Length: 224
Image (cartoon, rainbow, N blue to C red):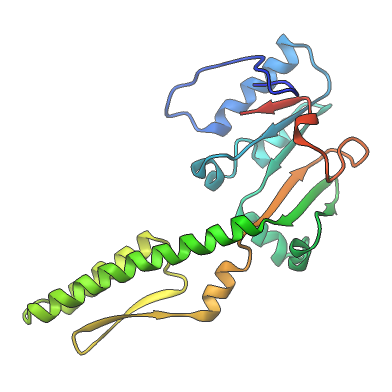
């Protein structure tokens, strides 16, 4: 746990199988009781892929349990962004403008698309497809050289690979005349990539305390 300048004010070690959100409540108590703070903003980062997928250290449950005077700034996951877009809380076109802010009750969402992250997501998707294609080519060679081999088993192996790579929403394998090929659903792929690079920061801080352009190092407490 660090102060606004990034200097550590407290270090606590947890068992290795402890999920990040489970470590948050004790830090809140520490700030309130040991340090005697009355007004604090916790900022939770999502620097690792595992934390990002899980939704970060500070989730809705943890936010609801914050005592009066305590606030939070955190990022939300892609599924949560999709939900907000579907509900028209956030309009998709806002991501392609300058940094925008959307207010929903007491909650503020700061939205923006990061072109670098969008391209990185696209590259990752292409790399995963290439991986599936390599396996498919290998299976096709095997089927050609071994006429008694089961095409269904080969197809299932490629399907399992596609599933493991999380490409199943827009990519599937077709078997025709003992040859496997990939079939892409362009509409599904477009829907899947629609929010590539889209970032949303969620906070309950009022604008007069933290505007949409503020530097995160200005907040009271930074959790790493």
